[in-house]
Length: 295
Length: 322
Image (tube, rainbow over all chains, first blue to last red; front, side, top):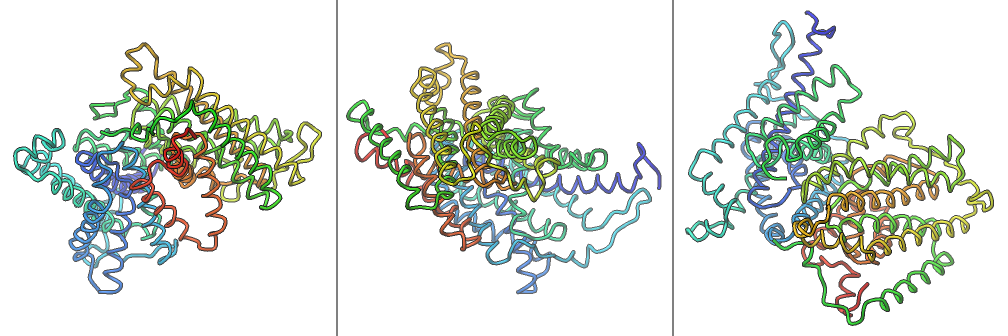
């Protein structure tokens, strides 16, 4: 045990770890929002609800089918991603060409429906989800105690973020995607099925949110309002980072999580508002966002 | 990209003044007669929300800016009014003015930040700023946290009229809301309002014509925030309560819903929408969480097939201005 700026190292690093965990979720969710916005021109307000659905799906699979965390990690993104594809076919494809605000309002409505349904069936109290056996316990690193599950969340989300970045920026499929973002008509003329690509992109973005939900289930209580709590913060993260850059979204997410964690140590009263304050400052000095190209 | 302008309707047959006068007379008649048949508190609530929605509509309908954080001005004005009336002993007219001024000041700060970005970012910024001020309201000592400010005295208006009498309060709310409504109507039909519409249709062009669009947008934002504040301050007196519900994001969503249902960019749409949504929430209150589902479903239906809203559809069918 030692102290830094008068704060015991356990507390400091403990909060830093929580910050990194929160940052992982901000990064995963803002990444999904950026990918969806790039292809669909829609700010997906349902993203928070889909994250919540991911957590609930993991909980229900364990509760009723006895399928454990590791199965959920694979099955849930596919399942919830598929519901995303249904949503895209049923609703979103009709508003893509309208003013952006209609996409926002529509997905806001969907988020209300989903949250309302889950509150009806599960109440708003929330359900606990056991940390998987393999990731129980933790390490004492001397300056802090590191729970294994938390370390896993950070490492795994970094891997997922990097893989997504790689797939979009460095593969052939990703280059189609980027081309279709720039000029869908031209890409269609080359014989690529752009509407199908849009549909799958939305499914993928939703799957990312669901994956974040599964990872969040053992850390936070699984509750119907967990999505709306986080989505507004993620919007602020997106405003700060700008949605022009995949890597920018990831870095901003992690950085803001860490800043939030540090604020909890040094100035706890401001911990729930610090991200919004940073957003205001960024708007003053760099209106286009840290990584944004357009206003 | 189809913009909000796709709502533009067939041209009205006359200048539109006759249909507007008739509709206004109908609205006035309704609110004059209604308290004899309907519960006055319900009507006062509807009136407060009607003003709130009209203030919101000033931004979305006439400047094309979607604010997803209007609860910030509504809720905080309600806190300020309640605080001034209860703890400082302000008379009601001063308390309401104080709340409205608070809404204006918050609007100036939030507007200054939000207009630095456009389109979808504008909505996200306003939502985030409102959430920040929700957390401030949750923590600030004077707001009373989860309890809110309760038992706010209604007081005597100008020292003469005892507002604890339900009908006197109703007349006070009615007059104030109608004054706000006419003020908004005046704004959108002034040269300033014409510039706002030009910005909505094509901001780049308005800039090239020499208009400092940022200033116009900021002034419109502050006006909208002040009127939302006026509505919130009135609501605090009507219910004698200021609470966290009014600053939460669900309230920002509700005002979007009311305006959308009634008709974005119509003069009377927000009033009709507010009446309908408040009625729905009052009569369906026992359904609990289903209200959330129903609200969501209305949003989805409106966006997919009913973008003009009720009043917009009527105006379009009759080819009149409403």
